[in-house]
Image 1 (cartoon, rainbow, N blue to C red):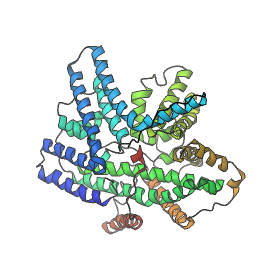
Image 2: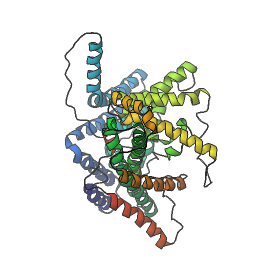
Image 3: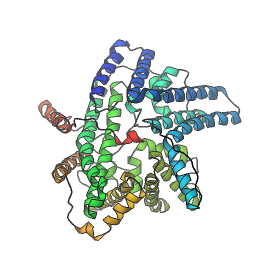
Image 4: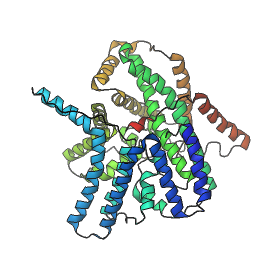
Length: 483
């Protein structure tokens, strides 16, 4: 079920009313309703894959209970690896089986040997990369004794399948979200209104910014052989805003929806395109995934405590694995490796923690130096996104080759220039609002809060009007549904 669908517009009010009025604030009933609603939400796409979520829930719940009283370290390790192998096994089969088979065949052909290994027509379960990492965080934290395992399987099932963030995050830690299912929740009007505002801004990002930018980006990338280097740069820039509006928009809707039910999810995007270096960008982009890899992969590998060789190795591992997490394609691996190359100079010179504050905090304008750093970082990010968007490595290299040709000096020309002009103006408006609200959890958190009611409603009506005006007649999937 898509957030931007009629189905969800009907589904959400029904669940909301049942949750707050039919359960009589009974915690177990509320949690049970969330489980049922979440299974309906997920099963709306394909009910057969509910078995994967249910199986993963039962396995990790059972392992958590066994870890509670188990003192034998070897057996504890067996239990942990059972959870890791089962969860990553499912993820690996559905997401990466054909990738490895294809590359296995290619490798043998390179050495002059032909082998016959069949690929499978596998459907990738929506959200499997997200809920797999969410359940793994539970097993790992219980193993490390950072979290006491729950004895309430309904609360745990609700944690694993919580519908607002089930299919595209944020990837919540058990230490943050699970305890919220175990304590009484009462309706908070202020929190609910704040949630609605964040949902509104999320829908604006998705429908007004991402979906419009997608039309231009798709036209240029899908017909890249017909366009000049300058036009391809335009396509890359529009894709840069498409993926940000699409993914951060989903996160805003998910976080806002959660607040309607009394839950607080962690911020997943913190205005990443205002970053002054790549290290800051990765502290602000897809925060739940970046911190997951940091805590469960980078630090266990030794982090940055070892020598230079270990630092370089660990940096490449975390970025390449992060790229591979996004999809079974060499383009994602190269995208990750490229970001590692961007990151290395900062780490090796101990400047990777230089920009931890908010740019121009407390000020309206940034300094010339900061503006220059932001533009450089943005340019590097746009270039990396080419690999992320390209269909394969050959496609990516063709685009880059054309960009570095003399055609880059030509005037961009492509189908849909009128739409591109209007979308560009919308992006400018969007980025101005993001800049004004960059010190908040989301851009419009406090904008208009001190205005007179008339002006405040004019402001919200403008956003609603733009959403309605640019709403497409057919549902448009979120980019990260494919991951």
